[in-house]
Amino acid sequence: MVQTRQTREPITGKLCLVSGPMIGASGMLGVSMGEMLRVGKLGLIGEVIRINGDTVYAQVFEDTGGMMLGEPVTSLGYPLSVELGPGLLGGVFDGIQRPLEVLRGMSGDFIARGLTAPALDRAKKWALTPTVTAGQKVVGGDVLGTVQETRAFMHRVLVPPNVSGVVKSVVDAGEYTVEQTIVVLEDGTELAMMQRWPVKRPRPVVRKLPANQPFITGQRVLDCIFPVALGGSAVVPGGFGTGKTVVEQTLSKYCNADIIVYVGCGERGNEMADVLDEFPALTDPKTGDSLMNRTILVVNTSNMPVAAREASVYSGITLAEYYRDQGFSVAIMADSSSRWAEALREISSRLEEMPGEEGYPTYLSARIAEFYERTGRAEVLGTVAEGDEPRQGSMTLVAAVSPAGGDFSEPVTQTSLRVAGGFWGLDASLAYRRHYPAINWSVSYTLYLETLKPWFRDNAPKGWLENRQRAMELLQRDAEMQEIVQLVGPDALQDAERLILETGKMVREVFLQQNAFSENDAFSSLEKTGGLLETLLEFYDLSKNAIENGVTLNRLMGLPVREDIARLRNESNADFAEKRATVCARMRADVTAAATKKG
Image (cartoon, rainbow, N blue to C red; front, side, top):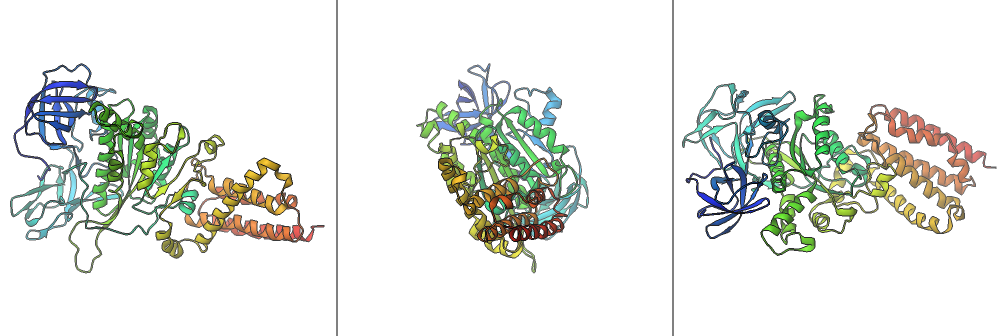
């Protein structure tokens, strides 16, 4: 079986330094940067991060308490890697891809140090249907066969990117374990359903594709006002209690990605426990099965060693790349990248490196940029048959950031903004008013709108882009009027100006606000989103004309149809169009009637 492992003999040295999660080992001449180590008598897992002569320094992904100098340190000969193959979906792994459910069965609720288990079940057999024949030439990315991984998901077994040759023999259709050889090439290379890949090396693609398709989330404020492209990236910064986790969990359920990789990096244990309880119970709107059947959880809670936080984000994105290479759309939810940056700061300080802004390492921006650059839509590796379209896949990243005190000027947030295409800023004041999602429309933005305009013109409801622009202008004018109101009060304004305030309030409460726990309001289709905004803008236009003809604002604001408009958000996507037509007809009739009775 092809693996990304070195063939040299292991090198063994002695522990000479222990400083929290960092250790030093002497007598390790020949060990390479990034190589994995087994540290001490317990065999803790570590990764080389610095080399000085024959002494190596490594970050250990487990607690180093109680270790003594002189204990053996052994190199493993390969970098930090993950196992890729059938059986990943529905799995719950830690930052270095140890299956937590298996480890719990081995040691109870608290994982014993040095304990490890393979990520993929070696005993389970999968029903394989080969798609190659003897004598066929294969290259990296070609599909060797298919496996029904879950009831709704067909797994494509791929040739590793660095392998090519002519098929000498292939097994018959049947059941095989992930380690069994299924294809032998003429040069003797044996291929199995499982492959390994270093997490810090991006998996190659043929070419990146334009970001011209939207990442549909079902959230009106995101899909309409601040859309992100499929294969793009968005930053979700916010202080404590602003709803970052709820936003990411909602997107996990309703977004248009085929596969979800959820990385809990340094999050509170009770939050991740809720995720582990809720995700299996959630019904996937795409398949009707459990949402876990197309989800991979990478869990690294705040009480786990900080070094594993960096490993968790890289493990998560490598798993996402593997499913992208199969031709699927993958969404990565990273919660949160601030915890990863804090781990970098701690390791950097123990290495006595020159600190940058707020103590973060000077290479923080480079690390974050390299991570974000692994996203995108791409034409993936693999032979393209005559007459077929090249296989395409995408990875979309939604990364939460937890700035201390909600300060968006801190280094992690600012560095993320420089490389991300979308900024969904969460506002504590909105969250305290129970306005969810608490996305501040005044500071948020998207850089993908121009490339997405052709798609929206062809696929979204008529007038989508024009109505979005009008809504943004209305919200801007509302914000300006709010400042005036604070000085002179609303009674000093003319009815036309007060109408802007009232309509802005309706847009905020009816359109931008959304209930994640409502069956009908949690997900809003493009048709419902476009129709709801058009209804609000039509009410504004009718009211504005009525005021110009002498109708008072109080009469218009007292119309019962306003409540009917507000209730439209709670209509199901299937019934929305019919209900909206009824409400709009009543709205036009009521405003017309108010205009005729203006005296």
